[in-house]
Image (cartoon, rainbow, N blue to C red):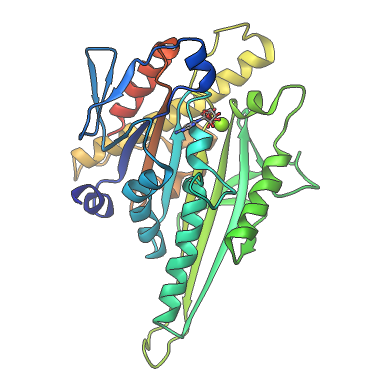
Length: 344
Ligand code: ADP
Ligand code: MG
């Protein structure tokens, strides 16, 4: 209760941790569980003595629905009310970021994207039912940031064209020439996501290799226009956006044979994740020292420039830090838990 209320008002960065279950092959290989959610709390214990606190903590049996209901639904509501919002999944490759975000499934396995889209359409329908003078529209764009280059995943002809980020006179972030498609149903949106995913640069590496090195950003623009009617005689229009971000893997560079291009990629990714961490920390600091003007270093990387109008200010941000429970990844998990607990 209090958490979602807080999310709506001043707590701009909400941090959740999700610990995935051990995978079948990890069980076969006798991986040990080294991360546990403290029952009935939002705390996570790493090993036997390191405790971390968050706004929400989800263990290996938590459902996709639980994640959505407790931390994403309030964000969608505020978005339909006209505020911008961002959800991003952070964590090492294989920790469950893409699983948590989903995209293209309507059953119980459907992730955040799937549930968000359904909820957006439901809320807009509801709004329209109560006001016949309302026009609503949902536009979607889907881009990928790879080695600090921004590409349009919906532009089949121009996938190699680089996109540029600008700021308009009202402080909105604009991606010049990005393709935006109007969607009227969940199915249409799923088709778009699927097409976009197929376009992701695969090159000589496998899809998973690539996805571990790039960020993808799916943006829903929600436009509401009120022409004025007998029930609501006001004229207004609002446009807000909800960014759903699958970040590159947080694992450190220089690990196994990271040389040449690979090393360069890692450097770029770390720039982005580092910049994102710095922006979030600055936002959290400025909230705790209200009144003082804190400098927010948005310009340090493309990812933070792109999300500028959807992070901080009146926007609401949810970070879902994903971790594996396996003792094999304890070092990476420690990094992620530290990063995430510093973001609050
Ligand atoms: P990432 O996107 O962080 O690299 P994935 O989302 O691809 O990781 O997850 C890695 C593997 O773990 C996948 O096989 C995925 O289905 C599985 N997985 C992740 N999270 C969960 C979960 N909460 N429950 C069940 N399986 C999961
Ligand atoms: Mg992934």
